[in-house]
Length: 90
Image (cartoon, rainbow, N blue to C red; front, top):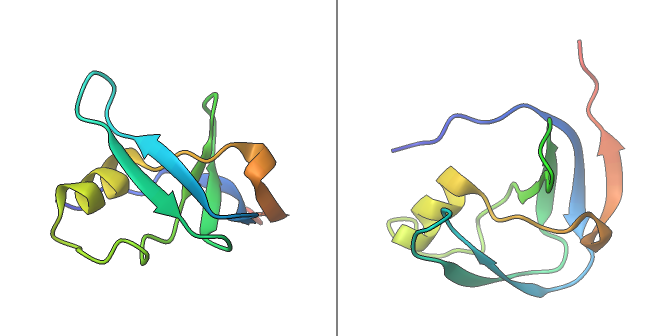
């Protein structure tokens, strides 16, 4: 199942490699290491809107880890994002 992209208002990249825990609330949580320089996007709204946009570092594209990352997103704190650029809205 492929997720429907949520509109985003900015893009950036991670400052450093970091280990992050993510998953659906009340469900199985995953721990993954996100490399430095990974592309992220700032979703339009929410209390922690930055999510990983480039999941190529997850090698097994058929895994639950990859599926949950695609559906629920891997949240990244804004203070760990650099090279932030606003998205032009037409």
